[in-house]
Amino acid sequence: MTVIFSKKCEYGMQAVLYLAAYMEKGVIRAEDIASSLKVPKEFVSKILQSLTASGIVYSKKGKFGGFSIAKDPAQIRLIDIVAAIDGLEMFNSCVIGFPHCSPETPCPVHDKWGELRTLAYNMLTEETLDNFKDKTINKIRTI
Amino acid sequence: MTVIFSKKCEYGMQAVLYLAAYMEKGVIRAEDIASSLKVPKEFVSKILQSLTASGIVYSKKGKFGGFSIAKDPAQIRLIDIVAAIDGLEMFNSCVIGFPHCSPETPCPVHDKWGELRTLAYNMLTEETLDNFKDKTINKIRTI
DNA sequence: ACATAATCAGATTATTTTGTCCGAATAAAT
DNA sequence: ATTTATTCGGACAAAATAATCTGATTATGT
Ligand code: SF4
Ligand code: SF4
Image (cartoon, rainbow over all chains, first blue to last red; front, side):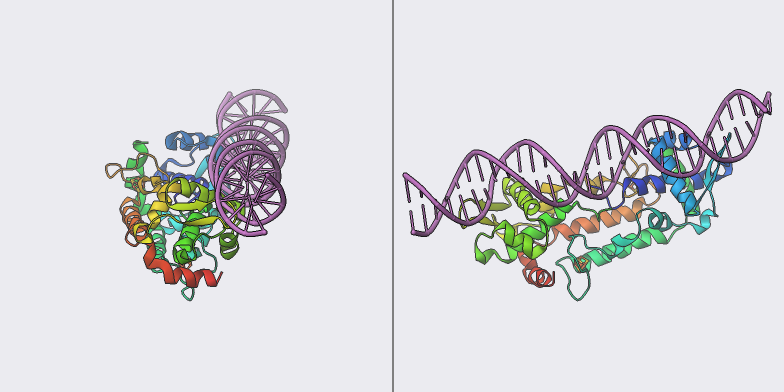
């Protein structure tokens, strides 16, 4: 069981938080990111490749190459990463897995789940990455 | 990507809601449950087998056998089904996938996620299956 | 007792997700 | 130009999840 997001998406968010927190270092090698986060190197590299295609991450090839954040962190929200990797279908789906989710045919937990989805959406939308710098650095230290 | 719970768990909750809503019918065949819910018959049968082992569901073998709810629906909560199938680890895990989740080393969204987890827990805990009967029947009709 | 209809239990297959490997391309330093 | 360190991109492998099949077992009706 996953907690809402796929590993791909979790690692993607972690890696982008890392890049935003350490953006003054310039490009950072996938290997450094992977060892700091304790996640598989090739996997995180692959995820960052796809985020490069989405325009969130910048990559530089060759010696002294690596990844960096492509835009101002003040313009990136966590939901942008979720949208790029897992997509946003979860915000239109049912916790219990019933089909045809709508207020006209509510399942037993419809009201509460709707509220939860809104809160989750806000959590990923209200703040931009620049606000997360200190907490990210502290969290990564403890991994 | 799943929305919090595995298919196994989603189908389990749906099937138990079904059994609770139609408990006056006595035992119900896996095939009827599967066709009403539009889920794979053998899969739902397997899940109900494991819920039988957990004591939530009763099963009767042989001709005119089937499944029924084993306890009073007023004593079963959705979280009991989640606990039996997916387990409750999600209530101690991070949305972003960081390890060592704790208030001492909070990740960027720790506060909001903590609140969300509590609401999700309440959603699955506060009501018992007997309260869901009407909504379940209406929802199943529309599948 | 026998035939029938159903669950049970476990083996098996399929699909998706997660993770790894490797050759080609690229860029910097010598 | 050559060497070296790196990403890129796609193929590949492993693991987890979802779904199916099959034979044994059990209970009912005749
Ligand atoms: S709670 Fe019910 S109506 Fe709402 S999304 Fe889930 S199944 Fe659909
Ligand atoms: S929000 Fe941070 S501290 Fe809280 S569970 Fe997630 S990673 Fe752990």
